[in-house]
Image (cartoon, rainbow, N blue to C red; front, side, top):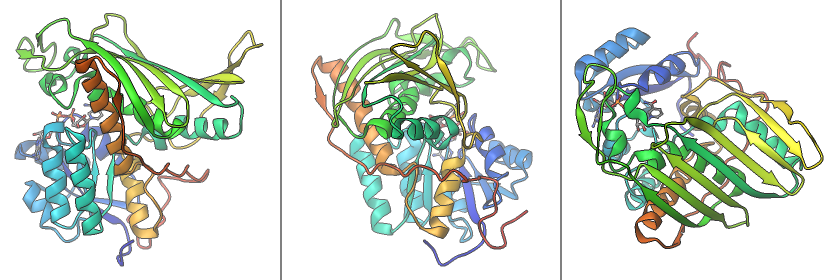
Length: 374
Ligand SMILES: NC(=O)c1ccc[n+]([C@@H]2O[C@H](COP(=O)([O-])OP(=O)(O)OC[C@H]3O[C@@H](n4cnc5c(N)ncnc54)[C@H](O)[C@@H]3O)[C@@H](O)[C@H]2O)c1
């Protein structure tokens, strides 16, 4: 909690592809005030500021020098995450970062320690767990509808983001690939439902060492593939459940957002963990049809985690998408990659406190702070 009141000042660092969704949402929440857009590419920062009515744009150093910026929203590429988070914490700013927290768990642990020492908050994407889909699943599982959770089956497969991203090389480098880029959605949801992971076994492969950009101004450019692009993984959770995951950029057949939780009494099909909304489906052993369960809760999209962080800053409480969960997911992803390389089970040692569920009336568009901008 801070002594300040009123809307919380935000600076966005990294004004690329995903900044559109963030800026659209962050500028619509009355408890936030987006004050600054920063990027290495100053023209890009200026263009995004102009497009979303943000008053100023410039370098990260300029953003960090502003006393009215209380949260830095880090939307840079994974290789720059640690450097940006560290600089923002050193400047006394709270941080929301896109995933992954860092390229390796050791660095992620150091960043959490820096935040704790400075008395600052560090939240980590994904924030889809604050959306209607997972919040509804938590309520349903908590009510005992599926019995005791036993297992999960998760499938994310497609031909890869080189098909649509205008600048996709980073998605095939260390810190990305299907596990580090898309894995956080599935692994965060599983960890929220099952608790901490205990150990992991995985195999991985890659069909080719280069790919070609398919869209945008650089279409036709060849780039190197540095990571495995298909993983099959098994995870054992401390409390007993197990998960089977296929995470692949190698499949002509696209199948996203398949996540089923099997309990002793019923199986629950969740919506895509890369989304905030969707419907759930439930099926017992005797049923011949799925029962549809509508998801209720926020469906606003990326930025809910930043808003949660801002409200915790003013009102107190704990983050719903904390850095500790981001670190545990990072360690789990590292274990998947290590296991695929070593052909052996790998332990996951870090742990985290289960984020509290959202109150049923949690409204991103409510004005909860005095003098909040209209
Ligand atoms: N693209 C998506 O659909 C998507 C979805 C969810 C999450 N993400 C995550 O969001 C992050 C950004 O992804 P993107 O697709 O927007 O990437 P992008 O390449 O489109 O944009 C990244 C931007 O960050 C800037 N940048 C890089 N290093 C910087 C630094 N040190 N200081 C200031 N600016 C810097 C770049 O100039 C660029 O404008 C990644 O962590 C990614 O995992 C992306």
